[in-house]
Length: 273
Image (tube, rainbow, N blue to C red; front, side):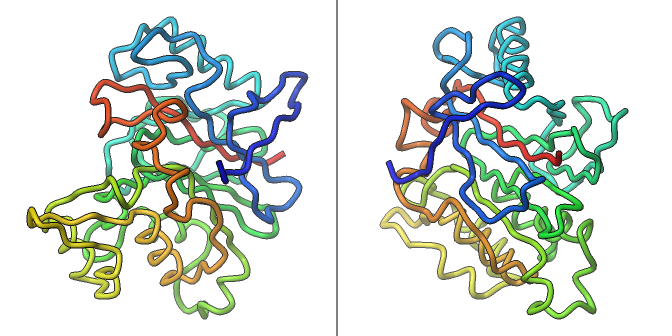
């Protein structure tokens, strides 16, 4: 596979060798990881590192899996109740788990902004001065948002105003990493999904391929890159839409709700030292 992988050591506990460590020019104080199916205790069909409490898995097994993640991170991972929306949390030490939101940011060291996915796109962001990090859960609804303002635009408002900063200036201050998601050869959608994007961004039409059935194949990573670029973020790493990043096409490595219907959840997390 062409997805970068490496093992390492954090707080005395090794990363699982199958987990994804973003290969991007983040500052040394910024740390990030994306889990896979590997390394947990959940039984089939959630085998094995399912981190979602809402998918029918044994709650004790999920808690054990979350503890495995916490130990590996060496910091607290804050989990949200994700609803495919655009609401965000600004994490502080007292922020509890399970608040309803689809993105989180923080300026506090020792708190991991964490999103769970099983086909939707995880997006991790940081600024080049390492003052803030963020993670967002971007399914098509959250990415499209309302009248062109989705979860990407909302999270970037927390980093810096989108106006009057010139995009050329803003682009060098924030970088993004896209994790695994449903790939452009597997994400079949109806015309309402295409219209939700092209209504406010005509260039989004390039990310949809017509099918004989009248439906479309949608390129979710490409749509995210367009939204990030339009908001001034040109340094985007990770998922390029190739087959190795597709959650549907890699059943031994990734959970996929579209493929399995009954599925666990992997997580992407980012934090500051």
